Image 1 (cartoon, rainbow, N blue to C red):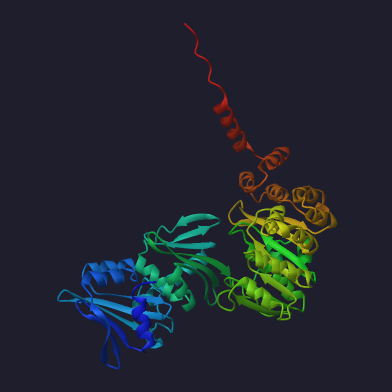
Image 2 (cartoon, helix red, strand yellow):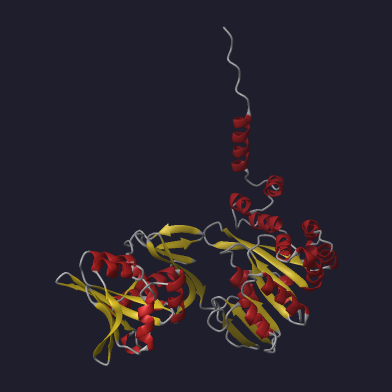
Length: 505
């Protein structure tokens, strides 16, 4: 808590117009044109500078320390405030006013702590951000990275590329860009914790998932594009066996993979299939809402954590009283959320969820390991009955550009249920290999299929494989290029081979 916050609390509680701090004077409140003392002690200029250092951004502090005028926004538990400072005859004056709606730009709330304020500047910065986001979509990039001192950086087909024509971004400009699109709740969160997640939309273009943060250079942000059009299972090449999971009346279906592997896109296609073919109530719990689903045959209720509900677990508990048929949980983050999801799947609801795991068997272990040892046997039994499918995916670079998903698919059959119940998840991979006719696919099989179809280079597939030894053998058996592996093995053998002894004289 900043030392200025106690004065701002008094400003709000007394419904004051402004807080004034002047060198060699006591703190005063301006109320209806009259000054009322707020402190007994006077402040020296160094003391005021110390107070400001807790709330002002680096650029403003440089102006203050050089004797120049500046202004910035600050938010705390008592609300948002606009601050201005100037020097007169060597005396520092600080004025802080509540940020009322009439003072805001385009009806937006005041900037978070450390954000420079300028009505024209914010509008110009927001327009510049919109230009960058349009470029993000036009270049078929997945992410836009903004960093102080760097030009705009795009992730295109999985690779980071700096904009050769872009100029380095200043901290002030980046702060103003973020303030222009950040909801008020997120501004307060950004001010208190220095990072926040939110969604931004440009009508007719796309939605964007944004993470705003601060690093050693100042403000920073990452925008990920979410296509405006909902993707379909046909567009993603979802197999018929996976599609059938959308027609279950109860059970747990998990889509897993590392960050940026397309889990949200796959879930979007499954929800869209449900929306087009069933007549049910679908509740989604997300952070933030990414794909927006219009009501088709189904009734779709989309809730955002932090905006429409306090947490995943509270929304999941409440969902049971909202007459759902299908529930999508954006992320199974903690033990309680996992527990409620499994119970919900057992009580006659179809539950979709995501986890950051790389294999189907690893997903099951992760779920069970979250629970205390004395509950794991019970959870294994519950999971063996409720788990209906796991789709674990990873994105690979396509030959010729773009990316394609390699999907490992685990489906519930009696053999799999028994292995889960008995704690023998390490044997699940063997069952998957022998059950391909039922629609199950291991990650190695999915990757080798992409290589055989000449969609992915063998080296790229090898880098994405989890069981690399088995995958290397599959590549060799099918006659694919493994020169990069042979070269590495030869180099390793040469490094371990003992040096020849020198010949004696």
